[in-house]
Amino acid sequence: MSAAAGATALNLETLRARGEAFSEALARENYRAGAGLIEATDFAGLFARFTDLSSDAALEIARESGSRALLEWVVDNRIGRATAALEDRLHAFEATAVVRPPGGEAIPFRKVGVLIANEARRDRRRALDAARREVVGEPIAIRREKLGIEREQLGPHGNGDPVAARTALSGIALDDLAAACEAFLSRTRDMYHELLGERLRRVLGLAPGQAERSDAAWLFRDAAFDDVFGAADLVPTARGQVGEMGLDLDAGGRIRLDTEERERKRARAFCAPVRVPDEVYLVTRPFGGYMDYRTFWHELGHALHFANAARALPFEHRWLGDNSVTEAYAMLFEHMLAQPVWLRRYVRLSGERLAAFTRDQAFNLLAIVRRYAAKLRYETLVHRMASLDGAAPLYVELLTDATGFRYLPDDALLDFDDGFYAARYLRAWQLEAMLGDGFRERFDEDWFRNPRSGPALLELLARGQRDAADVLALAAVGRPLGFDELAEWCEAALV
Image (cartoon, rainbow, N blue to C red; front, side, top):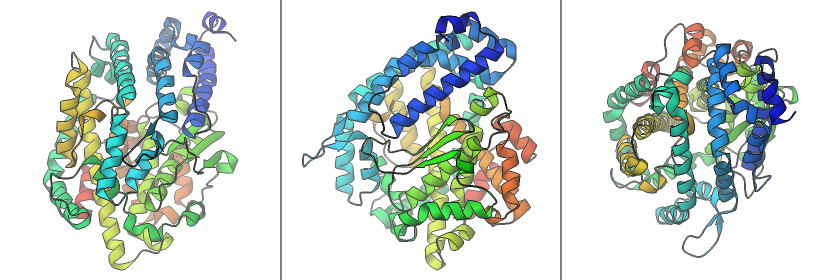
């Protein structure tokens, strides 16, 4: 079907069918590029084949359908079509660029993050990060242009205010969530900075105020525990643990694992749902030790969610909707690895090492939630600025204050999520804390090996993303979303 034909015949049924075909093509391109299987992407060509999905007709059909998920998706298609060529340029840069730290060796751009996280020597970490920043002029320019287009495209949906537009489209009250983030940052500030200072002195020999973002990558890597997180044991451990729950790691062949090292592979692990629920890729790039386990379990939560979504659900409930939900399932699995009962059973940690590790993980969770709380505040403020020129100093101020690590202005636009995705992560942490409490109440502390918990979880996963996170919280737990459960868990684990 040509784009013109698709536009002529477009109705709700064909919008869904065309949407599924487009989403599959887009996801497959994303998977192949992120997995390092192709060097160049053709997002511009894909959007050109499906221009009807960003047309005025598509927008009107989505509005008339009453589906917020479809409407937000069409608006994002319009943004995506306008920025597709820029996205191709960004992928080409990431796939081919190299950095050259002192010593002259050429390091693939996508690998430098792995090396920084694995580097115990501070001078070497800083040199690698400095070399990275020397080559980021092009992606900064691309992201600046993309951000300008996003702001322009969102404007009409919120009377010129991109934050109000995304609030209306997503149903997420971004200003209210940002205010809740401010309260969370205030509540946890003293505890966090006191613990950070102690950990910096003990692990890195640094005083508060001296640490940089590259130091955080090594600190949170927890390399001292690599001996109990063996690479050869990762997949068998995951398969055995989810099997005890009554779940199938491969979901009957619908989940395909891609854990191989590849030079052009993206450093950040990801899940690529190419055909929901029938073809889902779990992609990780080995860092070593606990980091590999944590990212694998996180992406496994995503993969199990997409691979177990009910096939009868309409397109928008399998593919679209509030990604806070799939992120919550990912975090539910990731945070199993911070539970003492999980660690004693599956990696045989015990005694003082177990106590130290679980405390570290509680601190790491608090640190990343604080980082994203600051990111949401930063992004809402930047989207309301008349010019992006003020983004860098605001980024440095807010992120440095929240995390205690010195952030640099070069990363201000590189560390900027499309579509206020930071809000999805924050709501996911809220929902995950509530779901985790619910599973522990129903199936005990070791719920992740209880054969009754798997079927209960499958009931939730089968809903796809039909329900937004706030709706799911009320349906599954009976309470509204909020930070209280998360804050209380951190306080209990750390105080």
